[in-house]
Amino acid sequence: MSLSTKTTPQIKAVIFDLDGTLLDTESLSCRAVIDAFELTNAPLKPAIRSQLKQDGDLLPWELKQRILGLRGSEWVPITLGYAQEKWDWVGHENGLDWRDGWQSRRNNKDTQESETRERIIITFIEAWERRLGSLCEQVVACPGALELVRALSEHGDLPLAVATSSRSEGVRKKRIKHEEMFQFFEHVVTGDDKNVRNGKPAPDIFLEAARRLNVHPSECIVFEDSLQGAIAGKAAGCVTIAVPDKRMEKEAFIDHSDHVIPSMWHFEGKKWGIDVDMSNHSIDN
Image (cartoon, rainbow, N blue to C red):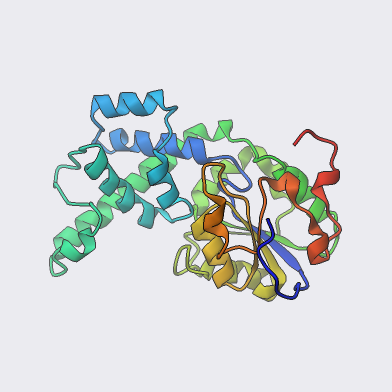
């Protein structure tokens, strides 16, 4: 699905999102989020936990699509609020309200409340990261990801980078069994990088990746699976190719992407002057 009618830019570099784009971490991430409730001594009710287990330890799509591509400091409050609203989750011992709109209801002068919220968010993120780290041996590459990265690297004059909302420690664990892929990246920019002030959908992380590659953002292709990431890519001025989750409505990307493809196996680089056509690979895709 081609969405742009503008003059085709000259592409000099390629930037990839990580989770859900290069590595199929999303199902494991869901499981780690669910387990983090218990790991932070605020477990879900048995009936809810049982239902989630029956659903394959996946988060409900109405929640998952809201948090895709966000940094932990952003998706944790959304998740806790969803748990309170939909799962009748009691919360932590302090009984803080995390439901939508909590920011407008809190007492901004109460520094103790702010500190407590920050502590809960950090504790939840760390529990999620530890659990996800223990599951990392199960992480597999997304369809066609390794093959596309290798093909682009063989192009000769296209430096590659990763720009991910994940923190550096999480990335370190996820890449352990995927060095065959990561060897091709000149830079990996993470969500906790000191130069990335704002998370997606802000453009900061892609601007930083382009800066490190010494290429203007308009001369970069960005591959993203999340809507928040696609918005960030376009805001940075990059050519943005969306590879959405199969559950995501493709129409949602029309205003935020230059092109939408079902998987990496469907990338055809000719449009951007790149001599890489994944459809030529002899594989059932």
